Picture 1 (spheres, one colour):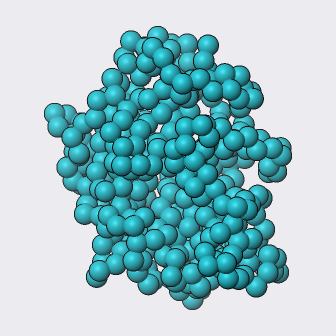
Picture 2 (cartoon, one colour; picture 1 turned 90 degrees about the vertical axis):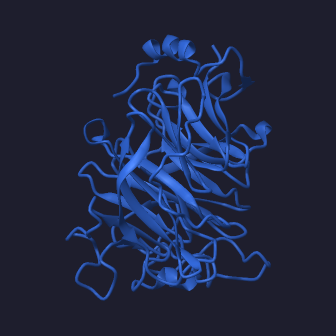
Length: 375
């Protein structure tokens, strides 16, 4: 259910979501204010909006909490599986099922500990919110195969399609980057599965010497994934090494080139790629040199910022900013950099049901921020 901006404005003030003051910033859409909806979170990674205006959030060390309308944090929800909370690993993305109001189902992905290392796993559960909130009927529906990670490049963004299939991004674990070209495992891939974890029969590699869940391959560390609200196309972004962060439109069965092609170099300065182009490998819509380390992604379709309707927003970790990309069809025609004065790593960005933009900041004292017009 979508909150209307007019009805919601007074309700949010009364409930405490909108403090009396906030830091004002200038932008192409006019002045906007940044307000703290919650604080005191330990590396919040993802957020989702419950039907009653509360917010469900993951913390990377392995906790899931509910944020009340006054910003109060619930105790950690029981039922979350043990996670590999080291390096970039932990409890990561989160999504409500599109029929959550009826079935109370959520999906979440995390770094799963295995034999001293870790791999990405995707689970579903029911969120029980009577009395003390908790997860029930937790079921892991997908385990990544391939060499394990020692703490890097898990990917782990989830999208649900209109026919209830799930897309999940999977990193290549950093030290095993060549595996992104190997169709015999899930490293450096985007997969498509049903809600029970099975592979749809029309996936591109079903019936071949390949993992049937694979939808696309040749990815490094994809930390942004979103369906375009008008075209239905799947947009993705991923981290490059030193340079070469990419935005791509993901097509069925395509190879996105990592590590064979790209626009960055290794952290030592050494050459990684054969070149920037190669036949049979896709080119990005946009890339960044130097890297901004993008994380989280949403298309804006709300009413609070009419000038931004149709824009693509993503957070930036190394860049410590919110990035707005203006689009003309499938082309990026302009980039606007916002919130650089905050000097905070932006881990997640979502459009809220109130039409505001909501962000998660990545630190041991992380915050949930709400962006709304200053007026």
